[in-house]
Amino acid sequence: MSDAHVTARSLESLLGDWRGAAPGYQSLADRVRLLVLDGRIPIGTRLPAERDLAGRLGLSRTTVTAAYRQLREGGFLDSVRGSGSVARLPGPTLALPLAGGEGVLDFTKAALPAAASLPAAARAAAEELPHFLPDSGYDPIGLPHLRQAIADRYTERGLPTSAEQVLVTVGAQQAIALIARTFLSRGDRALVEMPTYPHATEALKLAGARLLPITVTLPEDAPHALGAEEEDGWDADAAEQAIRRANPTLAYLIPDFHNPTGASMSPATRERLLAAAAAHGTIVVGDETTADLDIDRVGEYLPLPSYALRKTGDAPVLLIGSASKSLWGGLRIGWIRAERPLIQRLIAAKPSTDLGTPMIEQLVVARMLPQTREIVEERRVQLAAGRATVRRLAEEVFPDWRVPPLHGGLAAWIGIGAPVSSALALAARNHGLLIAAGPRFGLDGAFERFLRVPITYTEDETERAFAALERAWAVASAEHAPYFDAAALPNVV
Image (cartoon, rainbow, N blue to C red):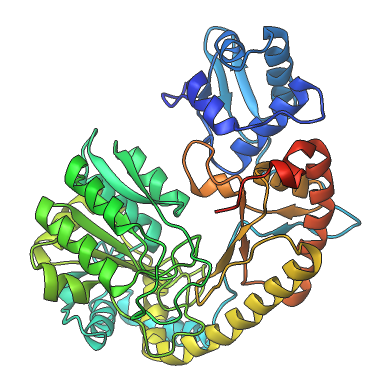
């Protein structure tokens, strides 16, 4: 029996406006199924009792019972008398419907294929591996020459770094979770951007944090240069007030090509947030996993820590990097850069969940890091092509959708004009497309007017995805017709 549970009130928030043209029990079951599929209801979570949910939603108990029955029959719930109903996925793998014989496209992953130089690096790493075989192979800190290579990159960016200030992890996700477990206690507040990377908020909540959201929006004309004075999407005044009033223990920020909006912090916002954090003892976690993935800002990459060193001094800053976004997702190598005392605390905490980072992956990354400039240029070309394709198709297929300016990152945060993102994502599954609904990146059902569309796929794959979205949009618009009355729609933010 799982200890995790969602209350009727919380589930009501997650459901949003779930009612459609289908019978009530069917619409309710469909929305809960999507919440399980995209992770907003984690596997193993106990759902509210039928009576409680019926009362909260103003439904008959018969309706909720029928919805739960359909979820059980589809393999999305396990129910045991006296123990409640627990979310699950059907079978070892989820069988998804196909459309027209085409394979399923998974657009929930905004990720690039492997860099061209990876096969050669892997072969060279395999030849190098015998040198390490006499040792145990357990490496909780990271190979010395890889840590030095990572440190050299920070030094080149203007942040002098030694190998002792770097800890290698199993991807950036482990880095986030390790930081959360090490520096947060149950009930501590953690400042996060909204929307944001969902697995980060999951890690913070698992560590017991209470989330303190600050809003990030993408301006109509996102500034091209990091030194520009235009609005950058962060409300610095609100963020400073939140830090001052709530005194969060930790702030998790994505300052460059923010996931999912693609926005980048201006120098002025960086200074203000770091200064506020320093004044109140807040640890700043800068997630830089997307920072190398620029399209237009050649030579303008500005590291977050330069302001920490020059302006704030006392603000503890931990920087997270990863090989998975720029090199390949199959290379599960990440790292944390911080001052030595913080790294030592992380090293002490790491063995409780992990005894070492894979050796051969470290050897591959160590060989590829010196080629970063060439790899980044390769990625720039790929992402520029993907961005052009997404923009073209959106204009052709959905001329009313708002595709924001995008100067880097892996996806476009598209305003779809109506609060039907979850319904659209659910309908798209019936046409062979998996795509993340906007609320996956928020809290309590927010961002139903947005859809994250990756710019990392081939032109053919993206065209197939938009064809599926076009068919799904017809279904969503029919089921939620009131939202498509232009006179009734508020302006999209």
